[in-house]
Image (cartoon, rainbow, N blue to C red; front, top):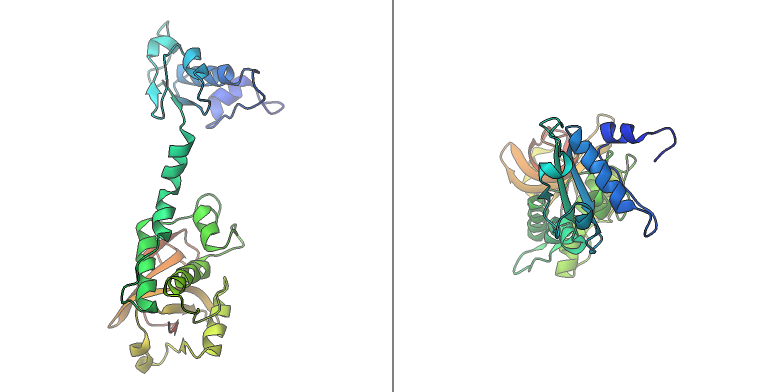
Length: 278
């Protein structure tokens, strides 16, 4: 424990306690004591081991444990019946492989290859976009952080790494690789750089001209303009229709923020938008 932190402090205040060290130093016993004392003080405690040996089960007086939390009979940790009524104690032996498989299953589903059939690039972009949306990618931890962000940002994450462009380019690149065609623009984590690449490749559509809207097809990218003339956010057009279009975009939320925390679908108007033809 940290210097100045007592056993009582840990039991009363901490939410996660990790007991580690070399073999035979008493990690299992200490972890069980922490959990049992937490339960005796009215907390809902779960003690977890990754050791396939039965040390934790034996410590708790059980025959075995599994990957499913097992409630420990109250009489084992509160034999005198004096603990507050809200306390609970459970234990499990974590199956690391199956747990990892469950954790990465949504990401595996999102990146699973799609048979293109007769789809063109823009149509396949929308198909991959919708496939990612089903897995509900979102940040974990501080702003712009977590495994989904690192997937879209080539290993980068943290407050300095907004990821809307990374998400859009990841989808576009996946679709292009599936069709074995070249990227129509240069991939970038920077929205302004995407606009510059679109202009250089004759794929930039100026959204202020109403006659240009018919050129915006499913799979196109939209660029949200800033008042000073550059762009702050990018997403993928799924369905243009009348006065609005439907999008799927990363680093946003239900309020449409360009610094949100997830991938979601939005309905947006055409105002202050430019587009990249795919």
